[in-house]
Image 1 (cartoon, rainbow, N blue to C red):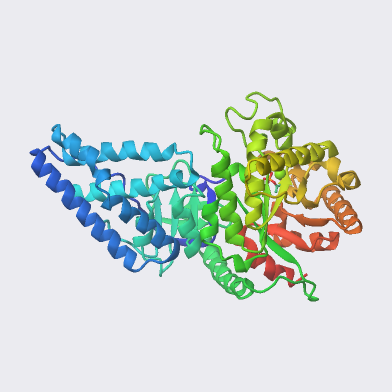
Image 2 (image 1 turned 90 degrees about the vertical axis):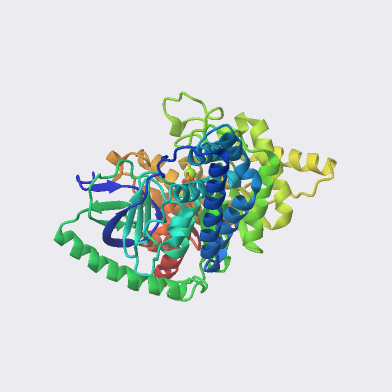
Amino acid sequence: MPAGNERRGTVASGGLFGGPVVRLDADAEIRRLAGSPEQENAALAEAVAVALGDIAALMDRADGDAADILGFQLALLEDDELVAPANAAIAAGMAADLAWKNAMDAEIAGYEVADDEYFRARAADLRDVRDRVARHLAGGTQAPMHSGAVLLGDDIAPTRFLETDWSKGGAVLLARGSTTAHVAMLARGRGVPMLVGLGEIPAEADEAIVDAEKGLAIFDPPAATKSTYAARTAELVKQREAEAEVLFTPAKLGDGTPVEVLINVASLDELDAINPASCDGIGLMRSEFLFSDGKPLPGEEHQYKTYRRLLEWAGDRPVTIRTLDVGGDKPIAGLTPGEEKNPFLGLRGVRLTLARPEVFRTQLRALARAAVHGNLKIMIPMVTVPDEITRTSTLLDECVRELEAESMDCSKPPLGIMVEVPAVATCPELFAAANFFSIGSNDLTQYVTAASRDEPAVAALNDPANPAVLQLIETTARFARDAGIDLSLCGDMASEPAHLRALIEAGLRCLSVAPARVGRVKLALREV
Ligand code: PEP
Ligand code: MG
């Protein structure tokens, strides 16, 4: 457990940094007294104009994803429709700042519940625009943009991130935040260490060390901790330089044997910061990111567009999209059973989608339509018996026939399975109907060791290097090689250099890893 001055968080962008703490602003306070409607409208118009000027200035030095975000914010603010509800409230006697905040909050609420993931993610940009205009209405200027500091707060607006000078290093610690927010993507793109979901943050702290390798924030560290981290940071800088050198080279072992290194992704946003030339494709797309708890299930068109964008990003490279794997640690209200005694052994993955054919069909239709846009493979999670492959394949055939009857472009992509249930890894020969195998070492380990993947008290037992797990990986690899079935491993152990030798010895030559680990894995493979 972390000590009193330590907090655990989720790594949104890796790295290490230590420095002075700078607190991020709270929302601008409401303090205007309402003047006449003309005065209030004029004040709002001026604040909007100044905000537009700020964003345009930022845009002059932005590129890529940053330019996209700023372009969206400019377009928002230039649209008179955005200000119209605030003007209406001002006409009814409200002060400009309160009218603006109320109008924007209503707009933001609409974005937050949008069916489309893209619009939901844009809610952060609206909050950013809201706060910028509110600051100008309050007569404030932007807070000074410290460089070489740890920015600490509840959440951080994308423009606040972009206005910060990161040239002297820095890091971000957020009580809330999310790894899929735009600002997390910006942080990954710029290599700024960032932890989100810290929960409660200390009221007082002058300094902090951000260990975004381990997901740890240490506030006001003692001198000994500081010097340990200074040494680790220096090592990390060297390591990063070495990784950058191999990132765009083909992965190979010490003796020159080629290895494929693909990436695991969970959202489209992640791809904006990744150059496809750095990897051999997408080895696992966890499609459940499209399905959010408490939101309507995504429809066929929405799913089709998302899968198509993934394929377009990858070009000729393969993209393996896994069908919905909810249940277990990933409940979705209205979809997964509310009360299960043992959810990891319950209705999850393909068990659930086969029990909800209308949900499965929507996804399979979207996938069959997307298949014409690239090198798509469909992967079934949590397979336990061969019949699950047969039933999924039959459903997919039906969907393809339906689409053809509707004169829709479509095709049937290869259909493979996750090998993550011991019943499959023990007898892989029973599953030869699959077009490919991908070993899910996260679930395989928890089922073989009977140690939950999300229970810290048994974390030491949940060890993918357990000989029983390695033996099952070897059994699967031997059968796949003899039967000529493509094999990869997409569990987290492939991202850990310490496990690579065992995986290569077990016969693996294709690994799918966390995007941030591609360089590290390529580098480590050369030592095997
Ligand atoms: C796995 O189980 O190893 C895997 C890759 O799938 P997930 O972590 O999404 O269950
Ligand atoms: Mg799994």
